[in-house]
Length: 247
Image (cartoon, rainbow, N blue to C red; front, top):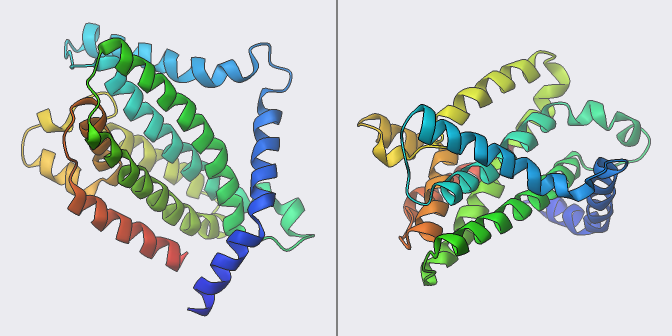
C-alpha cells in the first residue's frame, strides 16, 4: 500500500510536468515541417488506404464499413505499438534528465502515452467522419468505448512499466520486442475480422490477445451497435493492473 500511495501522489505531483512535456514533444515533432500537424491526419489516412487496397484488391476480402473498420484497428494498434517500442529505451533516452533531477520513471511513460494518445484521438476523429459518411446509426452502446479504451490504456501502461526496467539491462530487448509486436500485429485483426477466422484460432486470439479484444470491442459498439465481451475486458484490465503494480 505504501508504494501505491506514493504512486498516486507522484502522479498528481508531476501532472503539470507531464502536460507541459507532452505539448513540448508534440510541437517539436512538427517543427520545421511544411504540413505540420496535418501529418497526424494524413499518416493514418494513407495507411488506411493501403490496407483497404490490400483487403479489397489483393485478398478480395471486402468488409462492411471497411474504412472505419481499418481506422479503428490502426488507431488503437499505433498507440500500443509505439508506446511499447519507445518504453524499452525510455531510460536511456532521458538519461540526461533523470541523472540530474529525480523523476519517477513511470512519468516518462505518461508522457509517451500522452503523445500517442493525442494522435490516437485525432485518428478516432477520422473514424467519426467515416461513420458519418457510412451513415452508421449511433446507439447508447457507443458508451462501451470507455471500458475498451480503459483496458487499452491500462494494459499498455502495465507492459511499458516492465519493459522500461528490463530495457536498461538487456541490450537486445528492442529487437526482440519489435519481432514480437510484428507477430501480435498480424494476430490482432487490424485489417480483418477475427470473428471470420476458423476455430479454435478465433477463440484463442480473442481470449489471449488483449489487442484483438480491444479492437473487436470498439468495432462492436461503434459500428454494429453491439455489446462487447465485458467479462474478457475485465479480465485483461485486471492483468494490466497487475503488470503495472509489479512494474
